[in-house]
Image (cartoon, rainbow, N blue to C red; front, side, top):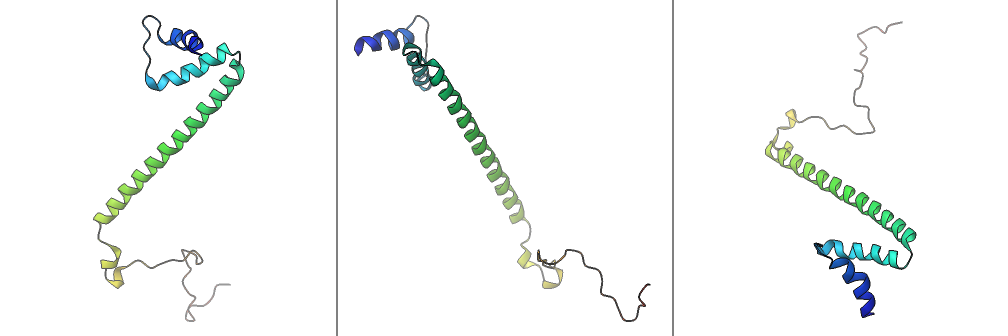
Length: 116
């Protein structure tokens, strides 16, 4: 086991002028072992799928963070305005229900003759 580690891992990591970040070592070793075990195709395909999944997840997380920040900014801006409850009843906007149409025609009065 020690000789395999020396031949496969240390030979690749400890070459002249090679510097590796800790975060990249395991990924590189997986690919190196795939070459040594003649399993390159299946390991590479799994690697591609994993990278696509990670990118998609990162995009979703970034979008969620942006949406949360925008929501917080909107709430802060609304809190700076006078609250709706502090307005007198006559100046409050009417509440509309989704069941009722937003715009209504005025009621037909008995004084106005109907158009034919």
